[in-house]
Length: 364
Image (cartoon, rainbow, N blue to C red):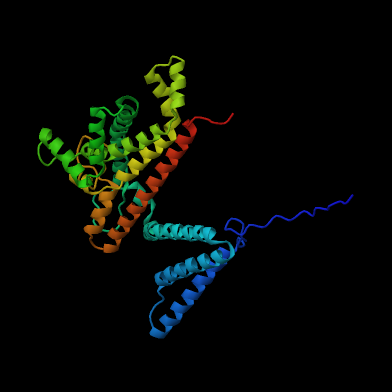
C-alpha cells in the first residue's frame, strides 16, 4: 500500500499596499532637514551672487515643496501608493498649520520684545493724569478694561446661556426658535462699530447726545458677546447624550432640574470655553469703546459716571497722538498691548481651571 506525502505549501505573500515595507521613523525628518538645507544653500548662493539678503520665506516654501515631492515619491516606491498619499496629506496639513502659526508667533514676539522693556512699576501703579511726556502708566486703562468686560459678561452670559437652553431643550424647531436662531446668525456677523453705534444711540435716547459712560461700552460689548455664547453653548448642549436626560426623567426629575443638575454640569467645560472665547472676542475691541466709553487720563471706578479708559483705546490714543518724546508714547502703546494679551491669557487659564474643577468626574 503506497503512501502519499503531502508537502505543505507556504502561503503566498500579498504584495498590495497594506503589506509593503515601511520607511524608518527618522526618514521624514531627514528628508525635511535635507530639503531645507538644499534650498537654503541654493538661495544663499543666489543671494551672495546678487548681493542681496537671504530670502528666508522663499527658501522655506521651496524646501517644504521639495520635501513633499520626495516623501511622496520615496514612500510610493517603498510603502505603496496608499501610504504615500497619507504621508503627502499629512505633510500638507502640517505645512498649513505652520503657515497659520507664523503670524501668531510673529505678533507675539513683536509685542513681547517691544512691550516688555516698558513694563515698569509706574506703568501699573499710575494713570496718565497730568502727564504730557515721559512717565505715567495705564492703571486707569487696566481697571477700565476689567470693569467694562466684567459688566459685559454679567449682561451677556446669562442671556446667551438661557437662550441656548431654550433653543435646545424647549424650542424644538418651533417658529420662535427659528426666529431666534436667525437673529443670532445675523448678530454673529455684525461689525463691532455697529454694536457701538447701537449702544450709543440707545443711551442717547434717554440721556441725550454726547453720552459717554463705561456701562454704554459694556452694553456694546455684550451685543457682540451674546451670539458667541449662544452658539458655543448650543453646540455643547447638543453633545450631551439624550440617555442622561431620559434617565433623569425616568426617575421623576423635573425637566428644569434635569437641565440644572445633569445637562449643564455635563457641558460645563465646553460652555466655559465658549464664554472665554466670547470674552477674548470683545476685550480687544477699540471702535465701539471709542464711541461709547470715550477716553480719559484719570482713574474712574464708576461705570455709570463719566468717561472710562480701556486698554485698546489707550493703545490707540498713545500711538496716534504721539507727543514729545514720541518714543515714550509708542512704548506705552506696546506695553498696553502686551498687558492686554497677558490679561486674556490669565483669564483663559482661570477658565480652564474652573472648568476642570466643576466638570463631572468620569472615573470610578
